[in-house]
Length: 238
Image 1 (cartoon, rainbow, N blue to C red):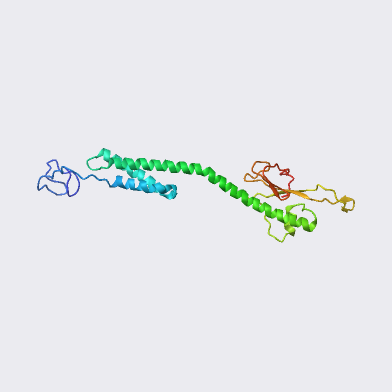
Image 2 (image 1 turned 180 degrees about the horizontal axis):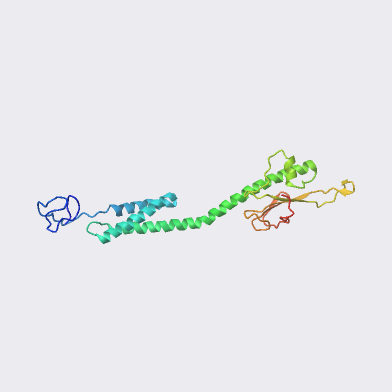
């Protein structure tokens, strides 16, 4: 018998306890009917319903996890002590709903991750294209003033009044090469001057390597959808 004063076990005679308490009457009998506790089951169901909005606000997944815990714990208590705990169906419904929401949101997020990564990659490539078009404008202005494209991007930057960035979004140096397709009459001594009337500007892309599928290639101010670069890593003008 448990002592009502200290909570310890009473003496074997059932009339006294080591704390000094003594029985003054027969113990009360348990009532014929208990009102079962349903708070955990109901709380689990409410949290599960709220967590439906986790498709919109992902932080509500915390409610989903809490609903799963409460529903599981409630079912466990009901199975072990059905006399004092109730609402087994409510707890089961909350558990099923919570697990369903968790799986559905997880699947939704897993499917959306590749799309998100593609969107981020396109944003990065768009930022690089913007830098390349800005350089193309500066190159064209240089050609108008000097009659030909510069030998290197450093030469362009040295005479430009703008703060030109010679790197792409991933901080790789843009590769540049000017070519002379037309012969000219101008000479310095016996050596003809090269007339650079074409150029190629290349971003190595996210991998930082030339000649791969993620390269961005611009030729004479136009970015090509699919093109191989003629610029080699060893001989390119950075």
